[in-house]
Length: 443
Image (cartoon, rainbow, N blue to C red; front, side):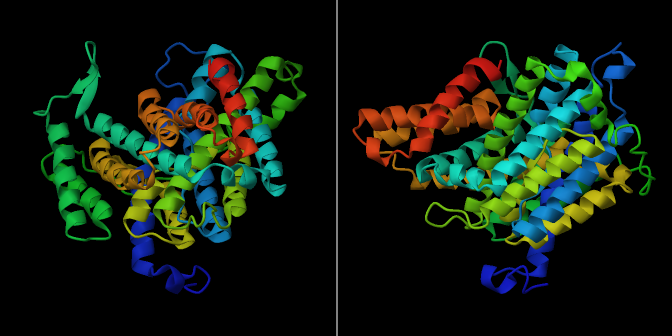
């Protein structure tokens, strides 16, 4: 086992990998609750039954697809990168495709399946890997830092430290609120552990915060430990009914498929580059086994759509596991096992509240921002696209949008500087596609 996962070469151990895998799971366990709530449109009253998916089935589909994705990524690609149904894409699935367009959720699942198959074919041809390797190192670093700012912003928002403000868009929250104070306590504890050199500081910080929350009555103790998983029957294999429905074959559904393709590619590529760069895998602007990593998310998405969930993609929360010491695919296997275990211990997951996960996201955001030091800020043609890539992610709440804006400006500034030959031809194609994305598909 140690030889297969290259523990000695990577300077890791079972303890590091297990702690890293658990940390990643705890940081992303919220998806087991958020994804079913989103796909079932739980916040929309008086919705016709045919448009609403079954909560229990989506919960099982979420856990199973995440576990399978983690296993494939860990064993096949050997990266400490966890997968699960992606936020943003699940909202597009539910609120745009189903609620706004009025498409049956079976059609939306079929669109996810088709886009995943297309991704799989592109990966087998090596095109997806070539596209990622064509991105200049400066923009890869900016993507990593931007995602760090984005998840730190999410952490601060989830903690209630920053809130919506009518006058200034965002502002400080109520720092006297007990839940906010619990998050602030978690930040201080995690910072202390990290400064003292604890490799599992992020994980231990989450555990201590959860325990303190239960002691002071801020987090409800789980009523039970075990529960039987719900039936998967209401959603399993239902996507195939769309192929026999003539209404599925339309221009609007083609637009949906293209949107799934576009957003998933760049969300996944951004996360893959950011996490692997943080772990030290990117060498000479190339990522070893990138093709295997991309195949992993394609297969996971295909399986996820069959079980009954939206697009499965790489999770930026994997960076919390890397921060806790994860360096090999064994950590992803651990995370996958925990997703399967979650099917039976869902009551225990109730203690992993936003107050517990927020400090981890904030600390990981700080760690990821370290890549900023490697960007050549004294060269304005590099500084402009790098800054816009980084800054637009938290402002737009979208990794893909941040990448789009930066990638549009990169060839423009390089041309104006007279560095045309240094721009890979693929970057011009990206710029044109992103212009189309921002003006059409993103609407």
